[in-house]
Length: 193
Image (cartoon, rainbow, N blue to C red; front, side, top):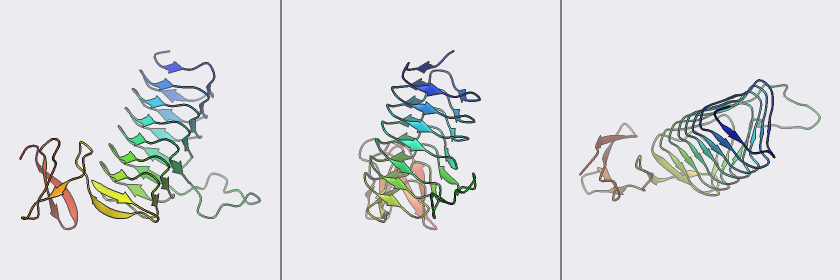
């Protein structure tokens, strides 16, 4: 076994876990789940049946990732962030594995206590603020905050909120990357100013 599972955690049969992944206290990885290499799953994390998680993903404490959710490489899931998979749940009428798909693209950040309502996609390098409730698709590099979440800015690949220049370009104060907008989408222009 080339990954770590704390003795208080449960890993069901028919689970794939990549090398170097660490699964901490009181977590449960359910049958059919795939967890990539180099991941960290914090305390009290539940990965449901048939969920796919990419490489280098960080899932903080108290997060449940339900069937229908797919998480790509290097995503950060903050403490107690919430995923749903059913817009019309009823205890009496289960959906029998017919869940809406939710995709979290690579390098996205989901802040503490945010909620991702099912059936949406969070774009690569996007950031969802703590406590936000996402009810629509989120473009790549977008910063979303509020209830319901709305775009409040753009973020750099390094995670810093971008500053806007007078010529319409956006730049990062931390790493110096420069971005531009074309047809409503943000693109990296260069990696230094």
